[in-house]
Structure formats: C-alpha cells, structure tokens
Length: 360
Length: 122
Image (cartoon, rainbow over all chains, first blue to last red; front, side):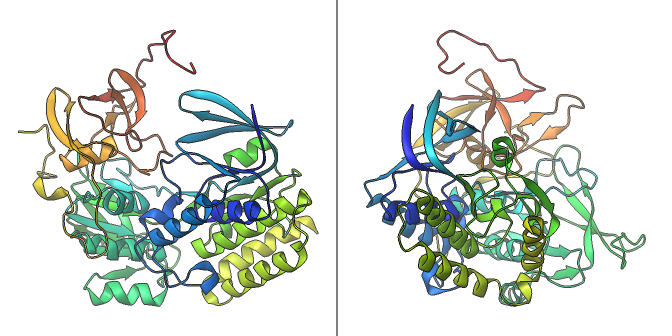
C-alpha cells in the first residue's frame, strides 16, 4: 500500500492540469493512466487549439501534452503510473490499481477522476464490420502510429471531431468521400468546416448512413437523406464507395469509476450521458472525490484543462494547502465561463444548468 | 499472398512516410506470425497497427453469430479487438505492443484462458 495526498485517474488535459494545480501547492500527487504516455487524446491532435492563452491557445494539441508533461516532470512530488488501470475506489479512501500484472492499492485523501469519454456507436445494419471505426480511432492509427486507416473514408458526423479528423485524413493521404451530418446544420466551428470544403470534401447535412455494405469488412456504404423528423427518405439512397466508415457521432463520459465510488449521477443528454452531480469546485457527492474534463460532461480540451485546474485546486483546498483558493478558483471559473460563451456552447450551458438544478 | 480481404484492402502504402506536420518515431523492424504467416512490423507499435499495415483488419469472430470484428476505439476501451497472442486469449491488440517473434491469432468466440500458478496477479 502506498499513500499520497491526491490521486488523479487519467492523464489527459484535465488530469494533467489537476495534477499540476495540486502538486504546485505542495500535495503529493500520483497520476494513474492506462496508456504508455501522458497526454490522453491530446497526443494525436495535430490542430491548433482555440481558447485563451493560459490554456495554450494557438498551440497544437500534441505540443500541449508535451508542455504539460514537462512541467509535471520538474515537480518532485508527482509520481506517474503508466499502463495502469484503476479498478475501484473504496470507502477507506483506497484506490485499487492493476499495474505490471499486480494488484496495487493506493491510499489517498482526494481522488480526481479525469477518465475522459468514449465514442458513441450508431445503429445501422453492418455497423459491426471491421472498417467501421470511431473517428478518434482512425486518428490514433494515423497520427500516433503512422498507419492509414484505409483508402477512402465516409465520415459520419460534422461536429468538430468529424471535421478535424476528415482534414487530418486528407493530410495523411486518405480520400474522404463525404461527411454526412444528420442535423440540418454543421455542428462544428465554421473555420474547420470551411477548411474541409476548400479541399473539396462535400458536407451533406440532413444525411446519414443507411447501411454499410460488405460480407466480412467494409466494402462500401449507402447514405440517404433524412426528413425533418430524422427519418430516412426512401428513394434518396446513394451508394458511396469506401473501405472505412468513421463515426464522429458524439462522445459519452467514461464514468464507471464514479458510479462504483457511489457518486450521485444524473443523465444529462447535453453533456453526453450520465455525469456526476458536482458543486462548482468539481467535487462530487462523495466527499474528497472530484471529477474533471469530459468525465464531468463532454466539452473541449481547453474546458477540460480548466475543470482540471478547478478540481486540483479543490482537492488541495480540502487538504488545507491552498491559502489563495478563493482568488485562484474564482479566476479559473471566470476563464471557464468566458470559454463557454457563444452559440457553440449553448448545449453545454443548458446541460450544466440542469446539473445545477439538482443541488438546489 | 496474404489472407487478405475481398476488394484488396491494404497494400504497401498503408504506412505514412510523408506527413506535413508529424514525423513518426518507429521502433526497430521485427517479424511476427499472424495465422501462420510471417509479417513485418515495428517493435512497440500496437499489434493492431502492424496488422492494419499488413492489410489485416478482421481480428476475431464474435461468440454468438461468428460475425467478423475489428477494432473500434483503438485506445484500449471497448474490447472489440480481442485476439490470441502467444497463446493467451482476450488480448486487446489496439494497446498491446508488438515484440519480435510474437504469434498472433484471430480469436474465435470467447477464447479459453489457461491459468497457471506462474501468472502474476491471477
């Protein structure tokens, strides 16, 4: 059994910022991550980030991962367990972890869960065939491992992930036949949409995939137009030659550990699914258990960095290590609020409002 | 001739060699055996990436209906990519690192786990 002040589960943008905020205030911090490197999904993001300068706007995602990891590496009170899986958190404040084939226990005063989110499946015939991949999976294969996912991709979903990954597929030398989007408008930022239109990738709104063709793997797809009630219109089917279908149809928070720890959960569709009920310090209903990043509700990496900072500050405040908590947390909340202004954050704001109402 | 797919998926150009932003730090070249066929990959890359580069994306067949399965999330989350590696079933090949001489087989159904006293943590 090892002991530390704060354990962070998940070393993506939220977890790294949480660990930085906690360790900079003198807490001993242990980061548990299942991958072989820190950074979470930042490591495959080749585009430059928006947001404010404090959250490294204008920097490419994989460089943000490197910068944050280097900052952490300079701190002596931080330990990192890589290729480690958190198994459960128990009422005696012990986190069980699988690491190097062993069952390990870590006793902690505060737990910060920054486990991120996973890609949503979409129901259609043959959606299980090899070649139907999460858009993030295609991105991992090409940007992290340098392997093209296929020759021609049909992208399903025109949110930021669908648009960005389509552009990156083209950068990697893969054709993108089309981006289909069930909604009447493109969900992602105009800057990403115009970029992929400029390189000649059509974005078809009010369209979806009807079925994937192929016996054992993807050999093509059929798309069709949707009516105003999201139903496919017979007679509008078109066959799209492709060997990969990428799903960018949204993310859902990875919250198993929070359920298991006994946190009160609420289903908020605007935030991607079930999320823990929290106060503005990102503390859940289980004292000492905090949440940050997409596990608290699906948003962008810059928001994850700020909720991570808030959770880290909240954890050290609970340990009496953060005399300037009021000022620092207020500043982080102000930055977060300014990031969430504007029409692209309408959904997130509506979701957070629902979550706040639970506690009132 | 590889046990490839109808439609000729894959081929020598699956590896990205020229990228406008990224460069890829690959491990040393290694050989591994997939379904009895010797293939090349790079040490330390996920087994699924090496297979994909060799044109292989059918990784297993499902327990009930025998449907073909590939990877889906590629980050060790969804368990769609379970294969038998060096005789051990249920290995998530999207995060398991390739080593020289590995034997990789498609998993049929649930796979059988041989428990021995030497296995740590079992």
